[in-house]
Image 1 (cartoon, rainbow over the protein chains, first blue to last red):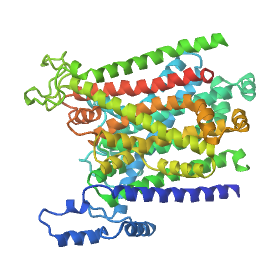
Image 2 (image 1 turned 180 degrees about the vertical axis):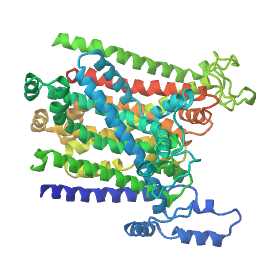
Image 3 (image 1 turned 90 degrees about the vertical axis):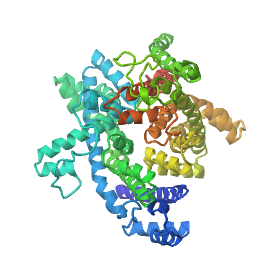
Image 4 (image 1 turned 180 degrees about the horizontal axis):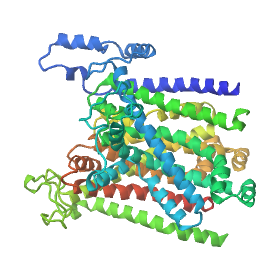
Length: 336
Length: 283
């Protein structure tokens, strides 16, 4: 019952947030100087043509009217038509979404793996040189944002020692037999490991650049809560029972130390997804963020609106899932 | 107790010294750019394009770190780029700090409807991808130094507001605030005279971190060609050029990148160092 109430409360607050985002993005981009219609027309187009195109995209109506029409359309699943490509925004955006989701999830998996291993190693070797090295690496990784990591990787693994691709999502020469845009996932299902490897080789560096700051956060927090847990009586008891240090850390301490890290990972995951915008640009990766920057440069208002709303939906959904998971995992909150 | 503190201080100092030292070098470079720069940072010379740095074959004296594809001197552009970076760090950082910390204080101490409005705004802001938001704002306002600063303030105030709100809330529940109330102080006075001094260390730490973030945001905007103008030397626009020319002139990317890296690292290490300094018990 309480869980249902949390869910309803969060859903309400989520919709208010989304409306706020819609209002802000709609009115902010309409202050943009430069008429998007003028850019579509060949030089020498008459007043009549301009008026007709304006009417086609609804730019002849008042701003509040345009806003209502846009919101009505969204509720019916229609996000309008892109000005530059003249295709439905929803089709364009959903076509790119899988690329960004695959990149983000890959980065998340890498961050959890790297951060987890560092935290466990640091706990195992606490007080030793390894822990000091891990702490220093963490400090640097935390301070340097994904954009800079991306540039370093381009230099290191793209130029100095070219082992990975530095631009694109997949080699253009490859013939893609896919029906969805989840290439990475579908290539596995179709057992096309050649394509899968090519995709990974493109995705590895952008994903790692996104993963490193998050990995450092995970390592730091998990190591700290592991250390605290290691001092608790039940862990000492397990140790006196003669279990090995590895068993004590993995089986006894970890399950109790992991909850704060899990919540943090959820919140940080939205920051990671936000980071894909510039990382996709840096690696010319054909995802949502790269399309968003092009849309801004081309003044493609309907497309900008659609992408921003989609990002907001993703962020708020991730936050909702984190809250629910926390409520389910934490009995104090569930019965509170 | 006294011994413990001394030990903590000894451990912190190198971090503060190193980061502070690099930032001092940067300030000197920015102020002295006209004297230090070997060339005019805007001067193009197609006969001297893509010259390698001094220690490589084919280099020319007068261009110690080489030139880009238009023949502009990399060292001079890095030096002049420090001006833009530091101006953005200082002005955007402090404006963000004042706006965000102010709203955070009000929300955290006054609670009630101001808190509801501010918290709701924070939640809406958190649903925007920050980089995309920045690019949008620059597209709206046009490129230029003022636009960059305004964009950073508009996007990043929530970083301060979230943390300071929580701190002000816990400070507001403490006894000294209650006794100030009993002593007849007004609410606004209590907020400024009692709460603010107690959250000031946190504000200073956040400000230092924010300066590093501002430098990065400026570089990102320069990278997508939305910073000041494509001609003026900024680290971001140099990095964009370097990225495009990476296969034949790596030095165009490497030198601004290292400078940016050290600067961002210094700001954040300065912040972390100050955090330890203010709160030795924490570590």
